[in-house]
Amino acid sequence: MMTPSWILDILAALMLLVAAASAGRLVAARPWAGSSGEADIDVAHLLMGIAMAGMLVASLTTLPNDAWDVIFALTTAWFGWRVYREAGRQGSRVLADGHHMPHLVHSAAMLYMFVALSTPAMAGGGDGMGGMGGGSGMAMQTLNAPVVAFIFVLWLSAYVVLDLDRLSGPGHAHGSYFFAGRSLAGATAGVGSASLAGVSAAPARTGTGGVTVPDQATDGGHPAAGDGVAAGSRPAAGSAFLLSPKVAAGCRIAMGVTMAFMLVIMI
Amino acid sequence: MSDIAIAGGRVARRGSASADAVDSWQRPDARRVLQLCLAAIWLLDGVLQYQSFMFSKGFGQMLAGTAPGNPGAVARPITWDARLVEHHAVLLNTIFATIQVLLALGIAFRPTVRVALAASIAWAVGVWWFGEGLGEVLTPAASPVNGAPGAVIIYALLAVLLWPSDRDAATAAFPAARAVGAQVARALWLVLWGSLVYFALLPGNRAPQALNGMIAGMASGEPGWLAALDNHAAAVLAHQGLAASIVLAVVLALIAVGVYLPRPAARAMVVLAIVVAALIWVFGEAFGAILAGGATDPNSGLLLILLAAAYWPARAAVTAVAPAQTVAQPADGAEGATA
Image 1 (cartoon, rainbow over the protein chains, first blue to last red):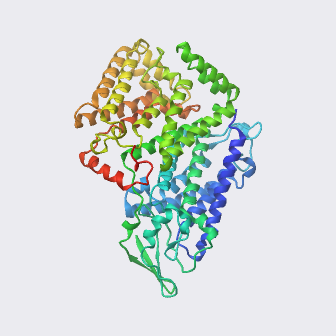
Image 2: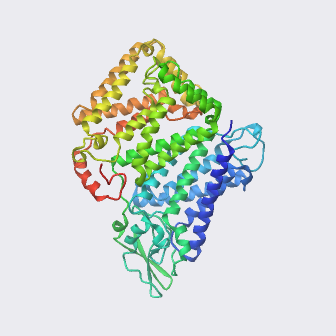
């Protein structure tokens, strides 16, 4: 008996939604125009969403496993570098609540899933993972070194509940884009916008004379954003929801739960 | 944090002292951390429940396997439930798994923490009966090494002890005492660990090969390194059932009364409880057999570790600060409101 395919379909749809939301965030924030924010994280979410959808449902497979190996090795290295830089400023504290640490864990978990996948002989070939539902006659795929999967599951579960706690606690600002000293998420950011009042409290000078822009969104005082900045106007109100911290956290939570699910059923 | 001043497209970094102003996310206190740990374990439970095996008839048969040895009044509903699950495995297991994931998310999400904790108590009690046969406490097979008195009842106990209200926050000696008071919390600890003493001394556990067989049996299906650990531990305990049971009972009895001791000794006993729970989890329960596949939960060892952490004696300074924090977070559903 396999995990019912409709459950995998629902999760694949959820992952495609995460990918779409991440793509929407990228478009709305226009990082190429210089907004300071979470472009690397959204790109990673976009890739993970597409990859996981392909793992869950065979027909959604997009790239060969080797390509995903390389992609997630790169994202793991990238976020490893970001965590290393954070650790230089904050020390070992980043391991518990560093801003980029969850993304490093997500990337590493994805890399592990692709590298450690052991496809039974009867599962057939194909470029992708073939989908966990497997289709008719396909055996369940399993992971080598299941203890690593278990550790990742514990870690991912911890980040999911921490994200929810932060999301529902006072002062959530995780995942915002900043532009001209203000959160692009705007007033719809809910609790996030409340915390951003602190960021925007310093008068933001606009116009050609100069703009004061915080280079780092903060999550509990931790750096969160990249370095690019540029002057410009805020995006349309329709983009505000996409750019809100709630959407970023929601994507992380959905991916964390789905990734934990995938790891567990492949142990 | 630093700010960047932009002028004419040139970027210059300048220092700023505004970091504290935006550090508005408040770190959770000890009880909230424990609640989040409980939520994470519920989430682990939920995703484990989505494993392929749980959607098969085998899951219903596994539930039915908890009925034998229990009194008829306990066993009959288990058998009825198991048959129902066997016939509607996909639907019911999906519901079960989803409920557990929702409990996890509900506990982690502050506005719903009370509802989720209350629901988790009801759910845990139901699972304790229908899914674990009351943890086999009414059967001769109960043993602290294999999960008695039932992992899921410890979830319920933790939900009670970590309930977000403060009976005596100002003087709470440990996080578990905040909601129910130190006396009740200590009594619950005594009952739980005292029951483990009793189970350790049951005739079935005193038999020469009882512990050996129990631990060796956990090696099946586990990764090589864990199977080797189990087999080695089983070999050490071969024909030592009586002595091992007595030693275990003495240690568990020390832990049971440990919370009544002065703070330094109480801390030592809590550490001992964590060590014993970890040994049980690794050797007796093989991490709940999760690595072998088909496990529904991480078993009791992990929960006992979390429970022991809830009894860690607080420093006087910390307990003095606790009420102020509570007042400062009125919107925080987890910690802000008092019952």
